[in-house]
Amino acid sequence: MTFRPTSAGLSSLEGKYMSAQIFKPQANGIFKIVPLIIALVAAGVVLALVGIDESPYITEVGVAKNQPVPFSHKHHVGELKIDCRYCHATVEKVAYAGYPATETCMSCHSQVWTNSPLLEPVRDSYVTGEPIAWNKIYELPDFVYFNHSIHVNKGVGCSTCHGRVDEMHLLAKNQPLYMGWCLDCHRNPEQYVRPQDQVFNMEWQPTANQAAEGARLVAEYHIRKEQLTNCYICHR
Amino acid sequence: MAQNTQPRRWNVARLTRLIWLPGLCLVLAACHLDMYQQPKGYPNDPSTFFPDGRLNRPPVPNTVAIGQFQSDPHFLQGTLADGSPATELPPNVKLDDRLLAYGRTRYEAFCMPCHGLVGDGQGIIAQRGPLTVPSLHQERLRTAPVGYFYGVITNGVGRMYGLASRVPPEDRWAIVAYVRALQLSQNASIDDVPPDQRGLIESGR
Image 1 (spheres, rainbow over the protein chains, first blue to last red):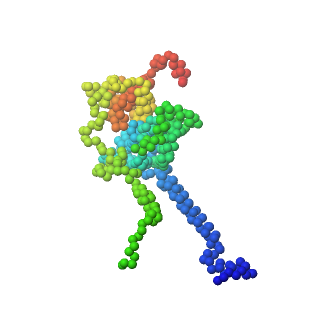
Image 2 (cartoon, chains in turn purple, brown):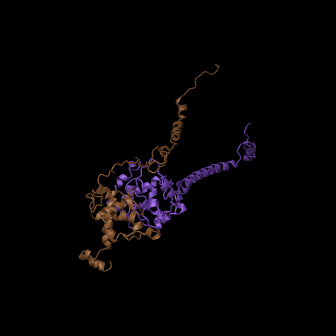
Image 3 (cartoon, rainbow over the protein chains, first blue to last red):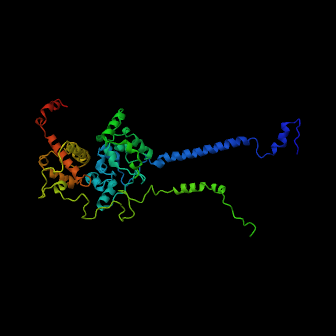
């Protein structure tokens, strides 16, 4: 076939050739819109996955866990003002704050609420020696070394990480325990460090003067900032 | 059978097309959790190895943990050689303001719920529960030797449970020292206050 220009010009060209093409003119639009939709859906999926990953569904932050005995920190800490160390007695001395032995529960509950059905598992445990299997709230990966005593002794208060335990009936996680969160304090501990006699005070709040006061305490407690971000400080 | 016997050529261009393969292997090889959950035990972990299901092992009867051998009955049991309560702090416990301040933190954590802030037996548990907690300021306890308090903290007495598992010996002595200070504070007269500070008390602050 030879090309002969005619008076019909372009319109005859369309008639002869364009109609024979696979793609119709609106294909241009479709090929612009479809990749856009695919990209948006992909971005939406990624955002949704990030959202799920950051949500309490994964991080468990703020989600109260059931326990074999419905122990209320709000009642014991908030209302009765029992010191954290009464039960978590090793928190100042070793890495683990420790779950209280059943004997610790019974040191009061052999006298008060002695017939409460809620405390049946505690009395059973005391008689049989079978431990109460509390559900763990804060679980770190095994490649992280964490020591409670050094934090508590250097002015990091309980509530800085664990939140207002004195306002929680059943305990809920207060932090997702991301590494970035650890580093936030390890890079600039003066933001959070408080006087040692306030460590177990649930109501302590930083004052407007925290930057200067924190820096003073960091120096006073010999917190060596330059080593706090070494890998081996937490990974060993 | 003999039409095409020419061997396939593995030239460089063909191999470079497989460059993603080791990468994928590396990525897939990282898909495991055995660094996250290592085969080791932590305190309070459950255990499938021991029949009672716990990893913390209760001590075998009649064993003595390292550092807990009771070679010094005065320091570790609060008793003299004849078994009677010691009347003095052990020689390795130095009585100073640091010991009293430390003893106060221990007292307020472990004793205050029942015995009250000043030792009058009006702690919050005593107020809410059906129990009477003796005041530490009664004559019998004001004249009791320090070893008696140490023994009570260690082993308990009456309805009070012993605190030996939670409070180590040096902390118990700090509590004993602070209890003595409380007893003095509740039975003090103005003559006990240094003369230059009496004005502060008399002015109510």
